[in-house]
Length: 551
Image 1 (spheres, rainbow, N blue to C red):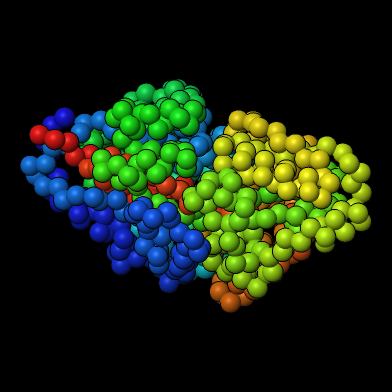
Image 2 (cartoon, rainbow, N blue to C red; image 1 turned 60 degrees about the vertical axis):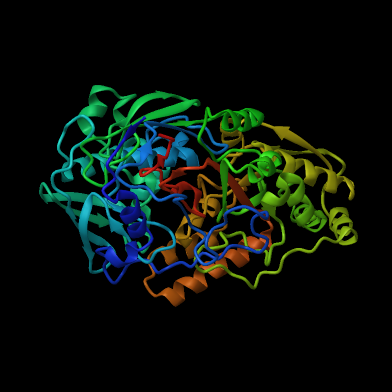
């Protein structure tokens, strides 16, 4: 440990983060502000909750100055999703924890924090569009990659070409797919032309998978080359499915990190996570089991802060399966579910099953349709619908990974037995579940969360043919038409009507059932700060993380 000069880094940077709408170089066509209002229920008593208007936590528990002792090393236990790859152009790069690493090692053209109106500068200092189809970016000069190469527009063009050629199925592919022409009039001017008007494009390229890669590094080493970026940290060591050890980049163009080494580690055993926090082997945990949270709430050496995930968390029915593809079977299940009971059984106080409506949509995602009725629990009605279905006593699978969803599946299975459905829980590891419950797969029902960020366009991946989040094998021509049209419609009122119709159609099919909102209890040692936690889990930011230690 050593003393480091902060130069007001923490106070100034985190203040600016919360005000980026005021400093962004945005055009009048930027996406609208999306107010994030947490659902009812909230965090358990004693937790440090998020702001009720924004649901964003900026963790800064203590005042630091030039004489403050800061740790050189911090270990973070990531959430329940391991880090399999550090290449944003691979399908396995989707987990939220992998996106946290991307934010630390790869810079994007522009940056976005979901509760702010507009975007902040990244590798681009200015951007402009007249028609939301052709975009011109002025790029930042004097930026270098971790290998010393100078950043220019050619790096952006290479990144786009690479993902379009080899990144099918990755989150980055969906972001860069609309680009049909990328040119550089000079090394620091970039012109991107899209296949059509796309009002979600700027939001997409602000996401963590849209980081810019280095051609020379990748051509020299196809496995480790994609780790090389321009970010605040470089990759010191990476062990797939285990940890990523990151080192502060001394040549970073932005606010320099104040912690030399940060390890983001996946710990599969829930009890081990608690022990590591208790013994000081870890300093921040996003994967502490709900059953152990009260111990930390009662201990003054720790700070518990909460975020409510914007992502709907529930049940998907494979519409291609003979049983779960039966509308009356799905209707029977919908009326057999007791959401508050399942939520409490899955995560206790750290989940909220008191839903206000039946829309399968992020609670803070723009254009949420609040007029969709929530199927009520009515066992007589459930049995009536089951009798009208083709179900004949067969064993039906509910696949799940991660303890919260396994418990959710177990609760659903018990409730379905009350109306005569023989449901069994198939417990899987997260990567295996992703492969098992893919679009067009052979699964039947699956408990999972759907990544829907504050931009309505992000929901398309759950509802279009082949979508990476489409666990229901959902494919409705009208929904696809609406999603495509909304993407190229500039008028906000017209877009709102389209997205609300999408939600109404999806709700009528009962392909998805939202079960709960997840309230995440995150544990930090006292003195740890400089992090930003969002309701959009993929957008957590650790670039300014620090930990105060005793002299």
